[in-house]
Length: 314
Image 1 (cartoon, rainbow, N blue to C red):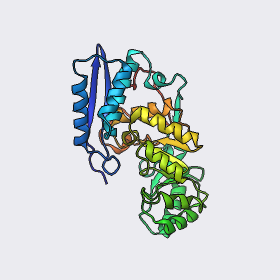
Image 2: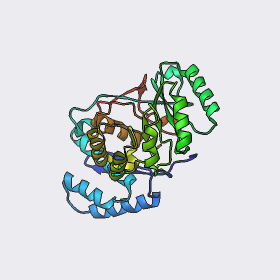
Image 3: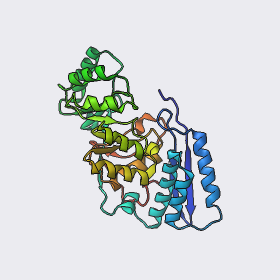
Image 4: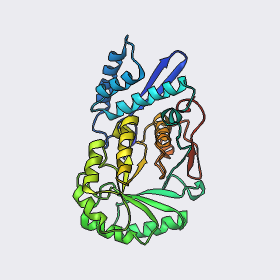
């Protein structure tokens, strides 16, 4: 349970343009602490101060100073891409890819979004009850959202292999998009075995931490869907490599937030757009925070990329 979120906002100024970044490592997902991120930012700031660098050099410098602090890398890359795209008078997504996707599918969240919000895919946190209560919960959700809505069931590593097999078999009667991280993140062997016992696609989230982890998951054939958190996986450039690897093996990538502020949310949206992600992404988490404005505008489960320069933030 998270009651508060802590992080840093980056403010880069060049002439009349400002680039914004969000650095907020999420406990339980990021390996680094907020203090680690701070020292990485300080080191980068010191290296940058008083020197002249071109764009390529800047991103090389970011990589050097954020080797073990993916959240700092994500925040710095966000801020520089926001700045550079504003200088070019275009959106971050268009700056990164002139053939970017203009509309992104978004999943809703059970308990946060209602049926009237128009989401066609709803994510549900499950695995807290016995199997009979889980079945009752699914039947109640169908009553609430309608039989045409698909559900993503996030088990957060709560089951062992025998229980996961039974759970998946019981869920096959429902309209399930995928089941996320049913087994311990380090247990790729059992995740791989589970895929042979169910027709429901298996997604990994906590198992995916960087490029090397994706290589291991693919080698073990442990997942169908790869959930990428840019704050955890290392920012724009690293996520692009990860997405290319996942697609080269005919698997599906999606992108979700890490409960960061709206700056990080908008960065994730542009990352989805630039990489032409077609499956629904987990970007509707703004309502979980008491103070989080502006929010991504989502209508009937679709978010559009603003035509404003940069991230689209004032």
